[in-house]
Image (cartoon, rainbow, N blue to C red; front, top):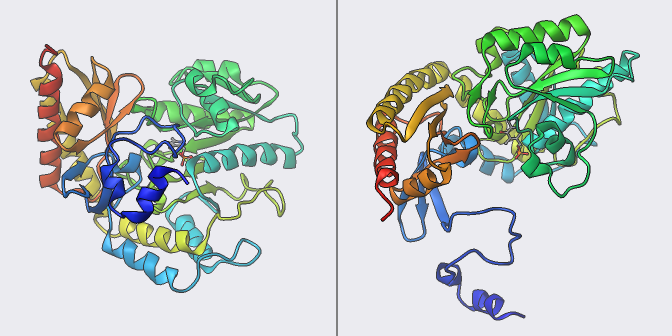
Length: 413
Ligand SMILES: *Cc1c(COP(=O)(O)O)cnc(C)c1O
C-alpha cells in the first residue's frame, strides 16, 4: 500500500492537502488545479468556500446550472426505484422521453446512448445502414468539415480530422472526406458514388464558435436531397436550447435527417441521443446497433426533467433575451480591449470572443477573477453560461471577464 493511499484512509481531509492532481488519474487532461465540492445554479464552490461564477457549464452541459431542484428531485426519486434493466426490456422513461423529443422536433425515432461521440457514431452508422438498406451498400462515406469536432472515438476523430487528435493512433479510419467549412462548391465536388451523408455542426464549438449560415445549411440540404444523401447535424454542443431554439437547425429553417445530441440533454447526467426521421432510421433494425447503458432509467428521468424545463413556456424566449444582453455586454468588453479582443461570435448562449493572445491566458486570468470560461480553437474563449443565468449574473460575467482581460493586457514584467 502506498503512503498516499494510507494517508487518504486515515484522514478524510487528505485530498485538501494534495497540492496537485493525483498521479493515479490518467493524465489525458491539462486540468486546472481546482476542486469543486458543490454547485448552486451558476456558481461552483470549492471546499474552502470560494465561489466561482460558471460561464463554462461543464462545456455546455449544465443547461440548468448546478443542483437544480427539479433535476435533483427527478434523479433521487428514480434512484430509489430502479437504476438499470438493460435494453433487453422496455424502459418506460425512454418511451416517454422519445415521444416528447419526437413531438418537439423533426424526429420520428430516437436512439439513446451515453455521450456525444456515441451519438455521432450512431449517426454515421445510421447513414451507412440507410444506404445499405436502400440497396446502395457502396455508399458509405461521410463528408465532414474543417474545424469540426465530433468526439474522441476512432471514427469520430477521423470525422473531425483534427491532426492533434489523430496523431499517434495509426491511420485515420477511412470513410470521411473533409472540405472547408462554409464552402458549398467544395461539398458538391466532394460528393461521389460512395458518399452516404454530410455531417456538420451548425455551430462549431471546439472549433471556435463558427456559425454556419442559414444559406449554407440550406445549400447542404439541397445537395443532400439532389444526391440521395442524408444530412447529419451534430448538435451535441449547440442543441438543447443553447441556440435560443430547442435545436439550432430551426434557425436555418431546414429539416435534417439525423441529429446527434448529448451534453445539455442530461443537464449534467451523462446521456446522448440520436434523433432521426423514420426513413433515416430504416437501416437500424434489431441487432444492428446498441448500448448497454443507453437510455437507462436514471438518465431518462433526468432527461425528461431537463426537457420539461427547457420547453416550459417562456424559457427559450428568455434565452433569446439573455443572448441579446450578453452580446451587447461582450461588444462593450471588446471595445474596452482593442488589440486584445478581435471579435464577438456566437449563436444564443454559445458565445465566444476571438483574442490576440493564447486563449489559455484569458482562461487563467479569468480564474483569478473567479470566473470559469473555456478555450477553443482559432484563438477563441468560449462563454457558455447555464441557460437559466440571470441578467445580474450576465453583468457579473462580463465585469469579471473585463477585469481578466485587463490582467492579460497588462505587461508581463
Ligand atoms: C463535446 C462534443 C462531442 C463529443 O461529446 P462527448 O460526450 O465528449 O463524447 C461531439 N460533438 C460536439 C459538437 C461536441 O461539442
